[in-house]
Structures are given as structure tokens and as C-alpha cells.
Figure (spheres, rainbow, N blue to C red):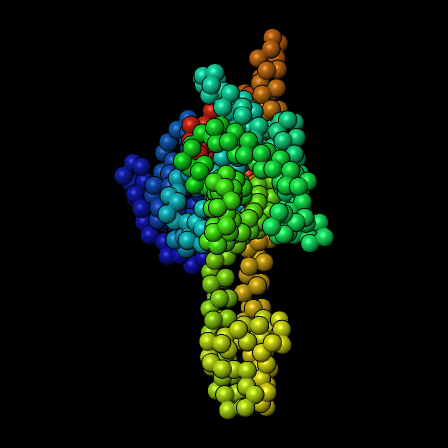
Length: 498
């Protein structure tokens, strides 16, 4: 078969096996004839054991396969025939490749059934398997988090339960209706505070103080104070209820929250020292800088916007492309600013007084902004400008496509993970209800046995079918755990899922 040269091997009774030994297997209704000498190339596998079964009893043969027909000497296996096509490639090519559309996790179970080590799987397929395992780990972590949010820790004390309840109230808008209300109120306060900060800079709405300086309207200051009060209470409650205080304080979004409320209290402290301190020029500049820092509160919207969170994560995963963009722009700015200065320095009305001063012109030209405050006046300078903005368009356009792809992939992945986690919770609830019905008097229970391969898996530790959650992109299925299963770690949860 396929031109493989046959050799002689010894069978289980130390007698020489015939080189013409053929094995007939039936894989899920698909018959196939395999040569014994080919199967003996990997003697530790299940198929190689079939070659040694010629002198065994029917009971011993049944332990190797699902069924055996002594009349036709046909071994029957209730397995996936499509996956078996990949398995059999090991005996002819020495490696295994997963075909498109086969679940990697299920295929690894097929390899385990046929007693084939995972090292025979090709590297390209191992990468796909690792990606699926990572997704399953994330789904397991999301499911564990949802279960903890819903049920809590029954062994926790009264203060710990109150702390966890407060944490869910402030950090988990999906956990309950009051948490959603708090999230909406916080979102409104962020918008109001941002609008007040912008409106307060309009001269017509400002008032003069005793020294004739324009200041914010008192009404706007009252609204600002109320907003800062809400942000302060929110931050303190989240800090009190945080399971890990150090991790909470050092988190990026929490640093943004602190920066959004800190300027108000610093200015309040400076004002409390009296007018003498406020008249110092350095103090006035510091106060002005602290007031400008209030714009940091706009980043608080990212806490309540999954789109902004996805954008941030996509940018983090696109550091390489962003680095290439900065490198292209840096090289172009240095090159064209030097050429522009060289071509324009002899002109009597030149605006290019030095190469560093020309950097500004190169930046606004390559980005096609073109303010017109600095422009070339010679023919060669204008040609250099034309080439610079053409190169700038190309330099900016090249890394944009990978960055957009990263955003789309990350966004789709987040949607799939969130949907998968919700479906898992629903399936766990259905299994819990089914288990309660099976435990009731007179309930009929299934018996474990070999079933026909389909889109479901039968658990040998349960009385119900466990559906596999299909990834919308054609990814792996996920085996759902029982409702009373508790995960001590992400690794343990992932192990149960796989």
C-alpha cells in the first residue's frame, strides 16, 4: 500500500508474522484494509496491537476494539473516520497533520485513544492547538469569575462577604441591577464633569474675582465639587473592597482615577494656606497645571466602555507595528528636513534656519497636515516637499492595515469569549436541572457505552449528554463542567474544560 516495503515482524507468540498480514478495520462505518508491516512501524500504538491479536481470544480482542467480527476478521471502532484519516498518516509519513475543520481538542483525544504521542503532531498544528487551549483557559477563567460573582465564597466570613458584595457592586456592572445603576450614574458624572470643565473656559460664562481676574462661574464650581465628591467616594469604596490593595493602587485605570481627583484637593489645600501663598508665581503655575490634569477623567470612560478597552488592548498588541510607524516617520523627518534646509538655506527669505527647526516642517508635511507656517520657496525645495508628503502617506499607510487587523481579531475574540462564557453558564444551569430530575424518584438514567460519533460527547461520569460549545469561527468545543464544580485556579479550570 502506497509503495511501502514490507518486512517481517514477530507476533505475540514469538512466531514470525507473515508479510502478507492484512488488518481490516471499520472506523465509524468506513472500512479500510491496513498492512501489518506498516502498522508495526510504531509497535506501541493501538493499531499495532491488532497485528498481535490473531491468536488471542475474543474477550482479549474486545478490550482492544469496540467490536470484532470473527467471520470477517473485522475490527470495529466507534471513532471519527475523518480524524482517523489523519491518524493513519503517521504510519506512512512519520508525522500527523490535522485537517481543516477538525476540533484540535477532540483530535488530541483521538490521538490519545490510538495511543499516539503528541510529539508526532506537526509544529504548525501544535500552534493551532495552543491557541485553542489559551482560548479555553480564558473561557474557563471567565466562567469561574461569573460563578464567583454570582454565588460568592461560602467559606468566607461576614466581612469578606460584605467586601465581595461591595466589590461586585462597584466593579461588576453585569452582576446585578444596582451595579448597573451605579455604573450608569458614574458614567453620567464623568460626562457632566467633562462638559463643566469645557464650559468653564468660555469667557462669557466666567466671572471676575476681587482682583479682576476671570474665574469659573460659582455654579459650575459647585457642580465640579459634587462630581469630585462622587469620584472620591467611588474610589474609596473600590479601594476598601479590593481583594488586593497593592494591585488595585498600581493598576493603570486606577492611577487615572486618582489623577482625576487629586488636583481638586491639592488646589483646595493651597487655597487654605491663604492669599499669600497663592500670589506666588510658581504656585499659580502649579495650580494651573493641576487644573489641566482634570482632563484625565475622560479616560475614566474606558472603565464603562468595552470598545475603549478593546482599543487599548489592540494597541498594546500592536506595539511592533506602531514602532515601525515611528521608525519610518523618524527616518523620513530627519532625511527631508536635512534636504529642505540644504536646498533653502541660500534663499534670502528662507524659513529654514536650521535642521532641528526644519523638523517641524517635515512632520506636518509627511502627515499631510500642512499648516503653511513654514514652506519652501525654491524649486528644489518644493520638489523635496512633494516627495516628502508622498513618502509620508506611504509610511503611514503601511502599518495601518496590521493594526486594524489586530483590532478586529481582538474584538472578535472578546465577543466570542463573552458569548462562550454566557453559553457555558446556561449549559451548566441546564445540566444542574437535568441532574436534579435524574435524582428524583423514578427518573430514568442512561448507561455509559459506545455511542455514534456526532456533535455531542457522552460523559462517563454523568447521566446526561454534554454538548460541545462551538466557536463561531470554527474553533474548538468546550466541555461544560457541573454546577457544583469549584475551580481553585485557572489551570485547574482549564483542565476540567479540556
